[in-house]
View (cartoon, rainbow, N blue to C red):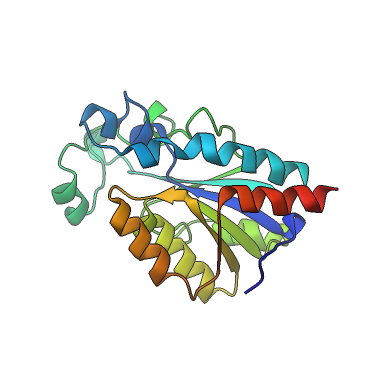
Length: 205
C-alpha cells in the first residue's frame, strides 16, 4: 500500500462532523453524549483540508440525515431509536442547524446526505468521485467503528483507494477506535493528519 497520494485525484472525506453530533446545542450535546476525542477532530482536520485544497484536492462532507416523516417525526431505524432514544423532531433534518457541518470545517466543496453508516449507501458520492476523476479518499470523522469503517469497506469494494486518518477519526471509546484501526489495516493506508498534510504540501511545491 502506497504511503502517498496525488491530491489532484484525491478527496478528503469527513464523516458526520455535524452540529448535532459535536455542538453543545446539538442533539447529542443536549443529551450529554460526546467524547473529547470526537470534539478535537475539526481543529485537527482543518489544516489538512486547507493543505488538500492548496494542492488541488477536494473536500467532501458526508452528513448523517434523518429524513422528516409525516408531522416532522424522523424516519428512523428501530435499532437507532433504541440506541439513541433522545433523537426526535428536527434532529439531523436537512437544512437545520444540527444537520450542518461544524463551523470549523464549513463549507465543504461537496456535501452528501447519508441515511445509513456508509457514505456510499444510496448517496451521490460515487457519482461525484467518478465525474471528478477521483480515485483516492482520505477519510476521517466519526465514529471509527461505524460510519468511518463502513465507508472504508465500501470504497474498497469499488476499487477506490483509501487513506484512513488514524488521529482524524474517533469513537466514543478509545479501545474501540484502536481495535477498528487494526481491523481495517489490510484495506488501505493509514496516516496521521500531520502525515497527510506533509504529502499534500510536498505535492503543492
